[in-house]
Length: 328
Image (spheres, rainbow, N blue to C red):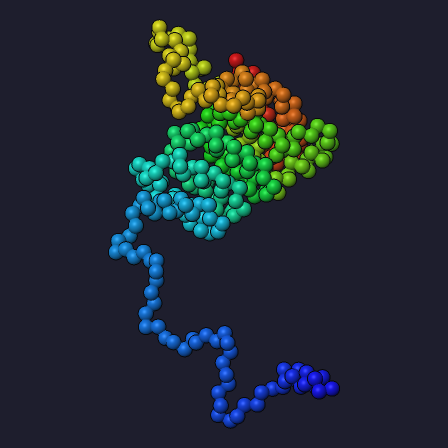
């Protein structure tokens, strides 16, 4: 009994409140930290203080490094700075070959204002630099054209329109630039499903853009793409005789004016299939287009029946295809 009463008394102590005497300070806890001190100065271990502003090259490197930031506003501000700095520069501060690969992944970003600023920056890139990176442009534009976001697809079409105006011949001739882009157009317009009814096809033609103006613009860019790929350009239109005799077709034998002019031959790269290969020759592009012509004609016929701006553009593209295919 004595031991049991002692244990009960010890347990009771744990639940008893300690009575403090008047004027006596409460004992401090074992993990108490004194925060009553005051510092007379703040010392930073790492700080960079300069009396002059950073150089333009340092600012360019800084803004290029911010292109991969997750914040859309920060990335947009860097694009705006690069547009103003590189657009007015007489010579590039850094090679475009190091800047362009960091710009292209931004095509599929969800921010509309960021993509708009990206297109402004694209327009200040010299055409010769665009041609040098044309295959990379086409790869990322194909990704944007097949994006799940309708807004991304619409903006990607605008970027493709700019690229065709800048280097249209190089786009259709580079590896994957003709066959794979043609497949993307057919898939985006939903022309690859031959078994669907006409009524369903009419509804599917407005999936990408809810506004007829946007769909008409896409068809217009598609016609521009076919014009560059199927029409006769440059030296093929030269007469066989005339003032340049005896130098017939002399431009064919001049030095190349663009970099990697024999890249389409893929002499040192991995083996490519037909779609991934380059189509330098117009006849090769016509041969590949013949496999899609029936689907394209059916899709354009459905678009013409819709009327309005879409119908007018579809009729123009149809007429353009007929004229191009009949050229010799």
